[in-house]
Image (tube, rainbow, N blue to C red; front, side):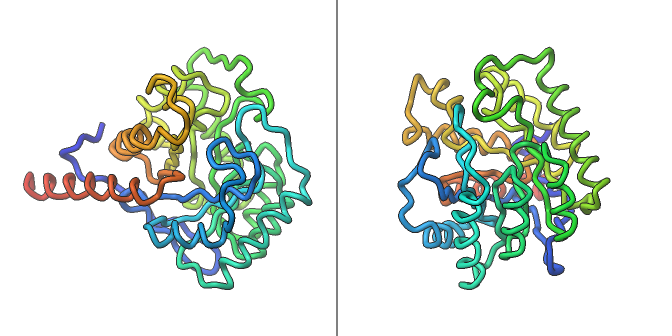
Length: 291
């Protein structure tokens, strides 16, 4: 298990369309841009998602994750044409404006992913973990990277009564199987990242247990961890609302970084970048001193 006295280790660079590569050092931060009216943390409050994405990149986000469908607990699906109309113009504007970091599209729908990749996105962040088999083929055709996430049920049902015999073993097995599915469809093995899906069909204790065992999940592939503003933080902090969970999210980000995470997905980019930079500096200096 990594400790604060060991340097943070990074997996090989992730290949992206057009011969680009995403270097996962630190770990890196993925900034969230919700183009939705009903996200659990910021729904309807981002007046200009293009400007917001640019600001997050300026703050140090290495990836911008654009989503047009809320996947909060209880959320109903958004029609494909509506979701596509939300995210594609944002991606096109960011690419046209020369955004210096790659764009991820947060979607469960192959049709939305195909349009987003054609508009210039480089990664597909699929909360259903390739639930639609066409998604892997769409990503492979575009030579895009894929983030495979675990979710028990659907956003409408996932928090009704999540149950596991062994949450770590079951999530790990799912992620390994879906990673293999992506590779079989033609996605570059180095371009498949995995995400345990904290808050997606899990109780507070399930989420905390997964966080305690991130090393097992990081052994499957580059690990994405998204704890930012989630209800588990609110529970641990005594019922704090989303806007009061920043410090808790930073604590979770540091924990994840020291236990093998390659990407931290967050709404709060600058504080997270700062926290991880300090941890990396301490780890590097301690490692150099020990050598």
